[in-house]
Length: 141
Picture 1 (cartoon, rainbow, N blue to C red):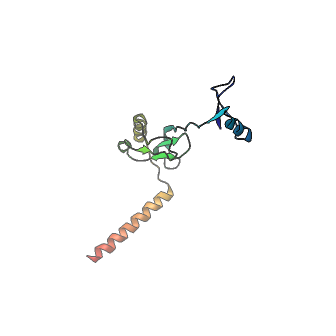
Picture 2 (spheres, one colour):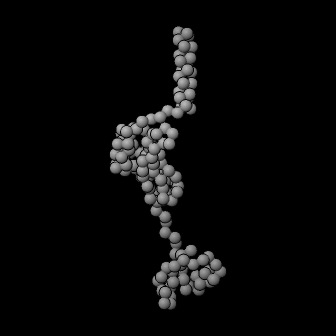
Picture 3 (cartoon, rainbow, N blue to C red):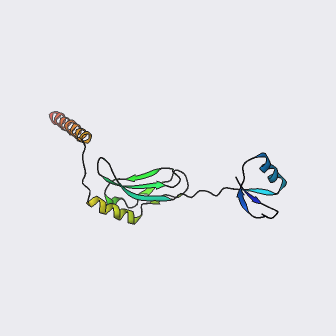
């Protein structure tokens, strides 16, 4: 815990002291006082990432206090107004900076998506189910 000396040659100095019986005795004697810890302020770091498998670009925001991450994938025109909400309470919601959106927009122009076998199978399955449902529905009419 942080304490402040109230008398002696170190009067006014703030330092760290262990939480102990001795520290409590000095506080009770009025020689030192406990100083509340300063609240931690969260800093958001922004960047552009690229998926290892899909090769898809995304905007990534991280909190300096480790409360979470922000990830945006989509059209660059819709990135404006997106906010990172800190779960730690160390900051107000932070909008994606304009310069990061511009970097993202440039990266998206060069993007060449790679569809893996799993995704290909997924889309094929969805297509087959949709085609089947359409055929069944058209027979009802």
